[in-house]
Image (cartoon, rainbow, N blue to C red; front, side, top):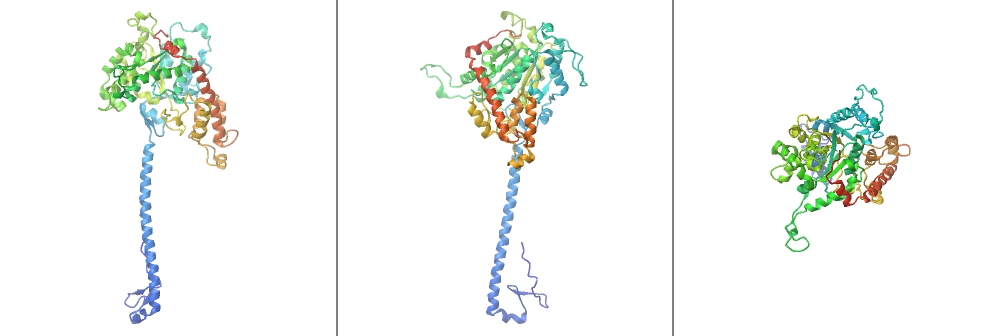
Length: 536
């Protein structure tokens, strides 16, 4: 900045001013400038002026630095905002998830109240379950592809009309399920799966299996569960020449890779899956490494129907990807077609399965999955007609029902990960582990002080404990009360501590019961579930 001249400066007749430290001196007064008093005063004022100029220079420097810092912060904020942008692919989930935008981006459809009524009509009103699953009631499963066509198949199977679209009651009255149960098998099957990447599964892995177990009970339909140990090796496997067999030891001819590691994870994960409560006689659980031969004809057909460019465009592969990654989508797509299970989904003897597979070839397929798995099946649906007969009721296209992501402990956005032990509750955690993780690591939407919490209430959307209760607390009225009290800072559940305490109670019971069921599941039991047998 510029320091202006003093307002009391005297200006001579010529309009010029001779200044000595703020004292005006005319031409006739030059001798006065030589006096000691004037020189001392001039020196003092000169020092003051230099200090002012120095301060001004410092102020300019600080202003420039502040400007640079602001620009840097703006750049950082822009970068952070970019980092928060929603990314949902088959291999990555990050950022702030907007599920309405996901529906628009992926081209799926929201699950409407009318569609829920149709589901209720073919499940609750048939007497197979008491009420719709909490995941449906709370829009945790929120999106679908052709779910209404699955309802049509069930309505035809039961011989009932759909509910009225105006919201009124259907003219169909509650039925005697035992007396009117259809004689022929369910016209579709369920298909879900698990990529065994860790020995211990966490609660996020449990969500689709809990829902699939409910769907199986509600629809009384067969279910196939794919264990993609091959995929995990292709994407995460390793090789070391030092580990290869040298002709000696207990395994002299071993290879140097860790493919067997993922096969062992399949066995451990299968125990957790079985413990979710599926119907044994209607469930076939299989490892790709073991069962792929049965599916191979359909895998070849899918390879023929899809180009490398299509796969790369959907999944982002490039020339550096191993060929197994590019080929794998066909292996995950193959179980979408009943003909991949010529004996399991067919009422024939085993030696006739390969030829007489008319039943399997025309079955519909419903896939419950997290929405990040949708790209696999969008690609599958595009070429499905090439793998089925013309009279297939859905033209071969698998139907899908999508779930939202189960949030990690550190924040209510994004997806839980097995790689961060403190972001998840594992099915092997002790009661003490559960309590510690929730109390220490669960992100709170509560306010900074008791006064603010009482005044404003918690941010329920950001509060992990409340969001987890939406997944696992069965009682709708209790959940509503907790949300109302916590969100307003009043009542029994006014504080974060109270809500976390409730979640700890719910999770200890859930995980404890799961661990008890898992104790009775041996490797021999797993092999029984993996035995190839008819499950219609």
